[in-house]
Image (cartoon, rainbow, N blue to C red):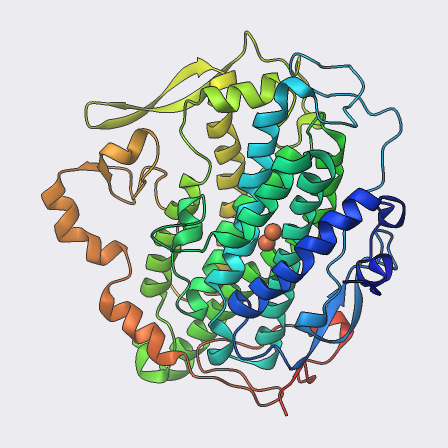
Length: 472
Ligand SMILES: [Fe+2]
Ligand SMILES: [Fe+2]
């Protein structure tokens, strides 16, 4: 790879030019990343010009530069948020000590695992979404898909930077392994369940960006509190990009809701499938599915790992620094769910092992805000229907609720009752086939598929009918 100027090729604020060891590690990894990208990245569009934003620095002018780029030539950069001078560890046993600028030896293994687990989700979602381009509902949506894909690629770079720069040889091995696992592969799957699910259609994709990327936001936000300063700074910058992914999900589903309501009003019918729309009942089923899969990502209600991460100062709570308590939580309690017979109730539990549940609570409240906005759209159309988040026990595979069947309303059910009702709560094969039947590419400028309304505005002040991807 001689002759490549890596500090030009890889925009960065980590002094890459002065770090020979890191340069060498990345020089070795970069072609493997590109191989992976060509093999597992967006299928069919690698040679097209896409109107993308690239981060070339972390300040206001540099973090979002827009231009046409071919994806394999995208400049995946390495960025940390600006250092906070005199930053100290904000929680746990080391609270008040200077933040670590190097890996604390005693926590090396745990920290590496945390970084690898986060890092693994980034390429996984690119793999899950790789076939979607072929059935895009518009050029605008196609461009947003690719923006998310290249940024998930950059998030992988961000985690690989930490592994290569701070963890020596085993870090480099982990960096390679991140390119070897494959979403949904039986032999070498991605680490977390939701990242092995299929994203077979655009409705699933919008749900994924709303619910599953939002898990990412909460994980990144709690890692941004970390006492390991490079991890904290990396995650803080990643959160600025994550906000766009969540925007795509929230406005995307909002636009589907909008379109459905318009069709219901114009056609004076609830049967919008006849008109090429996605009925609200089907939307509810997709919400039920993606929400429950994403809740599992937070782990068990009671977790010694979560307690340890916190006590060690590696992973904080959401908005840890804004909380007004002792930030050690040794004597504190927290309300967690409990199953008593076939009733779901709550109990007070020690706060430290309940940190997963607390993060899940923050996430649930955040999810609800978007659902409220979608319901506003429905209400504005004078339609009597409300989308809802199902009970947290619904269709869970991890933790307390994994052993029981729970209805969306929070009733514990017998297997038989579950079986006879689940078709009303989760997408059936027929629902999926219907959604699939709508997935026909719309690539004419300014046009949108029958099942989704145009966005309120375009990207970066461009018009909605801008040529976001040059297909010719
Ligand atoms: Fe990400
Ligand atoms: Fe994301």
